[in-house]
Image 1 (cartoon, rainbow, N blue to C red):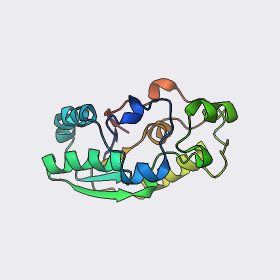
Image 2: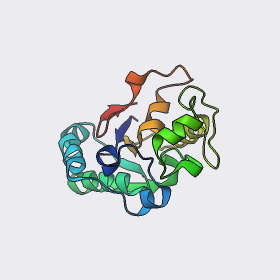
Image 3: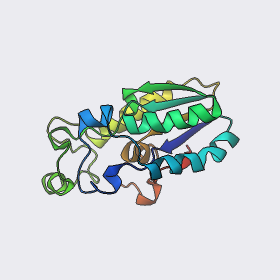
Image 4: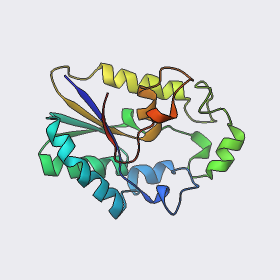
Length: 175
C-alpha cells in the first residue's frame, strides 16, 4: 500500500479573498475551484495515473470534492468524501480577516496546542488526520485530498515543523 497526498486547486480565497479565512458553511456548500484551480488539477492527473491509485478519499468541502471529482471522472476511481479530512476549524474566526486571527492567536502555527474559541488546535487536526490514515485499507493505493495545514501536519510531528514541508495548491506528493 502507498498513500499519496494532494492539496485542492486554487479558489477565490487564494486570489481575490486572500486576506480572509474560509467561512465554514460556504466551504462545505459553495466555495469551489477557480478555472485556474481546475487547470492545476488537470495538469497533475498524469502523475496520479502513474501512481496506480485504487481509491480517493477527500474532505467533504466543495473545493476538495471538485478536485476529487475531476480526477475520478478522468481516471475512473471511486471517491469517498469525509469530514475527517477537513481543513482546520478556526471557530469564531471562520470568515474573518486572517490578520484578526493571527493578532489574537499569534503562536497558532508554533504552539500546536493553541485552540481558537470554538475551533481546533493543530494537535487536534493532527490526531484526526493520523487516525484517518491509520484506518485505511492497507491493500490499496490511496489518494488523500485535503487542505494545506492538515496535509502539512502529516509531515511535521511537532511544533518544529518545516515550512518547506507545506504542500502547495494542486501539489501531489507521496506520504
